[in-house]
Length: 342
Ligand code: PHE
Image (cartoon, rainbow, N blue to C red; front, top):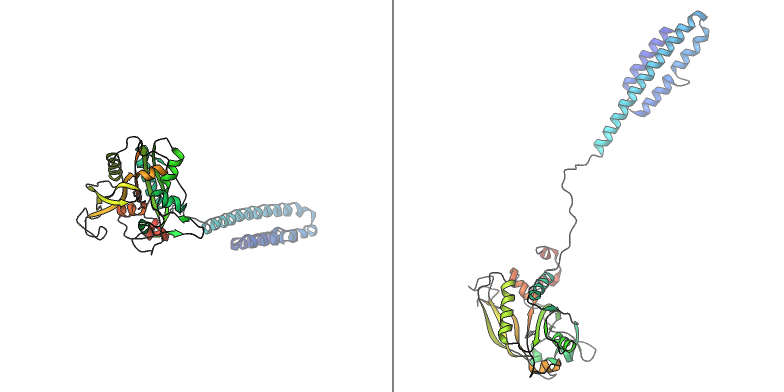
């Protein structure tokens, strides 16, 4: 029997060395160590041995069993380790790869300029006040000294609506009258930022929608010099490095006198380019002293009060600041344009 055990053990160990996975290993275990396995078969012969030979044979069988079990455990350990290592290799990630940054939104370029404008005026004591985009003809025109038949209406291409007397505001100026009516008799220092609409053939220079920032100061001792000082202080902060500016007489029905402010073209430094139409100057805003009729429409006595007002186009300011040559970029929502700013 010892001979049988010996050859069985040698065979079992040889097979075990060939086992490559846990399923084969389990088959090996039942084949040699299971209840109907090779060892059990050999042990069934124990009863046929003479009684004196049985203890030695039994002991030998136990030793073979212990060695095979130990070999089995060792093989299982090795196979499990290999399986784990293979799984790790398969699921491996390169933790040194740079992450995918989440796409961060940003403020629209117009909003950035609006906020910058508000911040500059806030430092000079101007509050920001918003008024409706859908406006009455009365406030958009009549209260601003532009009667229905007046040729000055041609200065604004207007979206009239089906509702009699209701328009999309063509400028932020109607906010002047709203604010005056709300605040009388208090003094006013305010900017009125917001969107305005014009019935326009859209081109590189004209949009049917744009933003404006209106400015209004009303008080007892307000002069043209105050207006000029405020506008120059604004332009110097908005256009860093601006060297020259000029005020050019103009006409608006709601200011008297009226003027427009030009700055030296920031793109060519005044030498002349496409943006300034080779003049070296670009217009940035309209302004003037609030017309007595408008003060009156706002509830203020023009004999006791005076005021100044100005209005600027936010997209136009932004185009000059960043050298953008087409206003349509602002509302076409192309991320490749918008992502360049902020
Ligand atoms: N509302 C004028 C425009 O839209 C600008 C302006 C505002 C001019 C205030 C003078 C005073 O063109």
